[in-house]
Amino acid sequence: MLTIYVFVYGTLRAGESNDVARAAEARAIAQPRLIGEATLRGHLYDFGAYPGLVRDDTAQPVRGEVYEMVQALLPVLDEIEEVYPGEVGLFVREVCEIEVDGRRLSCFYYPIHADRATGLPRIESGDWVDHDRVRRERSTQ
Image (tube, rainbow, N blue to C red; front, side, top):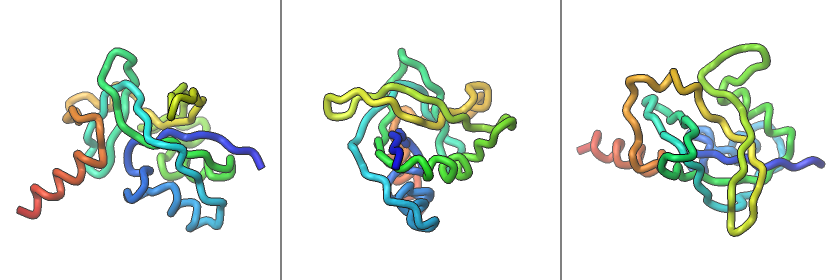
């Protein structure tokens, strides 16, 4: 069984609306294994229900999680992020190098096309989960 690594920074993170573990379970695919938390430099933008990452090696760190998973889960993530062969969407699937607990791993991740973030608010903290939690708390006050 081939395994891959994936860096997730938004709704695919644990406990979020598209949690990778729940996505695997819903499709009877082997559970992904959390390798650890990690960061990737870039700008994080608020699209309302989800974030979008524009990679920039000179920018702030964006927080996320790295998972080891079976390759069969990758098409499921593509579907969630609406990445389809031959179609231009908001997200793309790319590969990056990320350090997790002193190990460098080649990971898939889902950044957005930079031009799609024009005019959207930037998430200055670089952490979607924290940003979304604070926003939800404010809306209930």
